Image 1: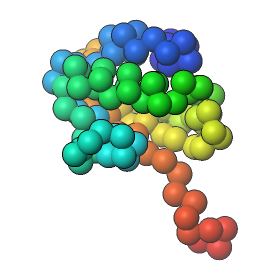
Image 2: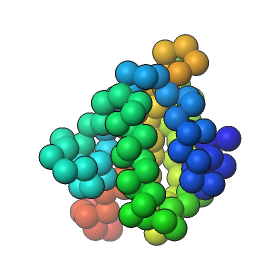
Image 3: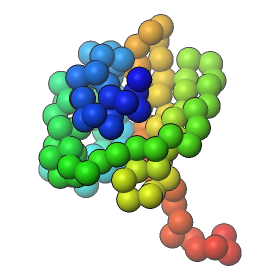
Image 4: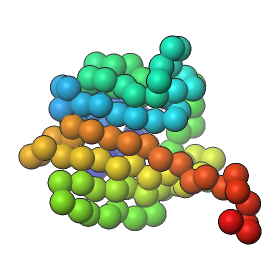
Length: 113
């Protein structure tokens, strides 16, 4: 459902799982939102961020690698349209996501690290 909604660029279907007061941190948000510290606060701001991301990356597509389940937390690991590995850490309060963190593979240290 999450994957299908993203690949259809259906922001509203993705947002249906998020609390109104959600916080979402992403290095991409820090790059594309003017004056941002990379933390998006509130569902309306998250909607605006994701719409801007889709505007800038119209070819956005995710391929699922794995889903990891914890206590009130899941991690969705996927490859994005450019082949980069990404994990989203999502914290729940009941049925809604209240906190999210997008994390990206750091391959800057090279193969010897």
